[in-house]
Length: 70
Picture 1 (tube, rainbow, N blue to C red):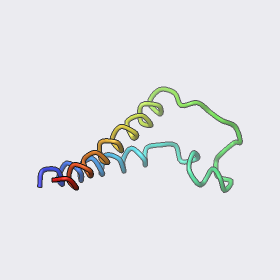
Picture 2 (picture 1 turned 45 degrees about the vertical axis):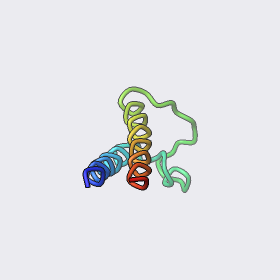
Picture 3 (picture 1 turned 90 degrees about the vertical axis):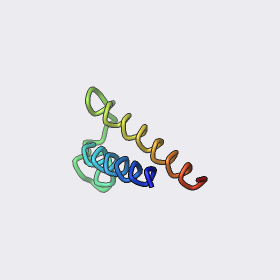
Picture 4 (picture 1 turned 120 degrees about the horizontal axis):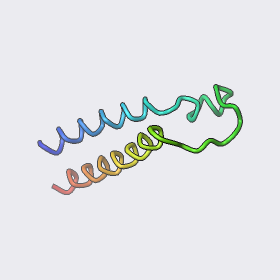
């Protein structure tokens, strides 16, 4: 039961982090959105948000595996 609650919290955090990322880096950039056609490195807060998204995704996957085992 506790793992399920933690999974819900982590899932909400992942959703928020994904929504905070730059919109032009997704599918809208592929189909002619705000993308200006060049690669830009992540800096500052954008880099922290990207890294946190990866970490929380790994935590979520780990929790899913733990819940599957127990």
